[in-house]
Length: 350
Image (cartoon, rainbow, N blue to C red; front, side):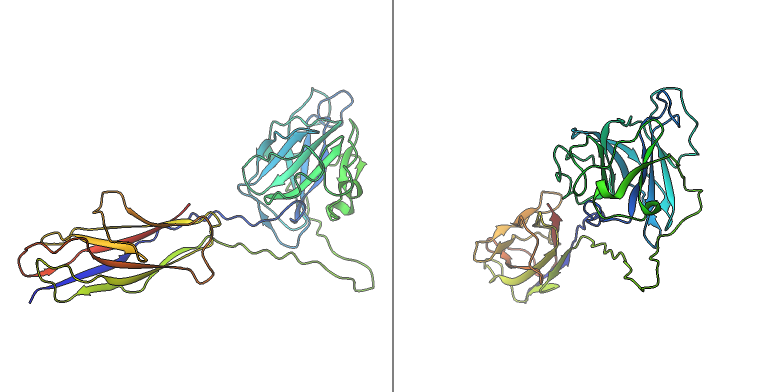
């Protein structure tokens, strides 16, 4: 008696590990500590504009892939300066920017260099934890929902800022500096910044960690972050499907195969299938979803057969797709023997 076995194997296409933690405006421990916007101008204290970053948290922060971004006071087109390395707790990081002339002293060795020319009268700078340019900033609060923004500072005539108002405008002889030596962050630019003599610090400066003081045993803050990784997986109800008594000229009854897809991608996913040819002779293998009729399963390298598509994340326990595996026509007259093929399911994030 002839026996035909169908081996069902799993194929999974995973998503890239790119999920960055959602932070929102002002939520990170890396903040703008100081900003100077008159570099090289007449009477300038320093020859270049600069932004000094400060890590007010209790642990080092890796900033590879981050950018410092600048837009004009009312603009929504942002210029990017790439950041690399890490900033220790209490440490500074100096970003040297453009110059308006030849006046002023040279900055200390910069940790990053960009070409943005900061407007002294007003503008916006943002620390962004990826390399995608922002598009917000035309009105107050428009950048507040930016999931990649670690800190935002609007100064002078800036249209957008954190809190009740913009930080003051700097001058040729003053920078704007964050209160508490960089440690104060109430998410209100007007309250957190004041003008002061420029004092740019780079990563070589001695860290000055932030801590609570006084005898009252006041509360302390601990930043908690969780990096949620992309998930995309497939589980099959049966690893092997067997048609034990197949006779040429007949169509064996289909066998059920539940395919469970788990995905946290809010854009959804697609589920498809392909197969290898049966050996030593091919057979008309088909598959159907739910109560639908069977469709022929293509043989690689032909394009996959699309089984399902979604535009949302799966249910917490996964989406269960009930499929039936069988034959789309009666089995041909082939020699007695053991016939096998491999059925491969593939899930791809949209």
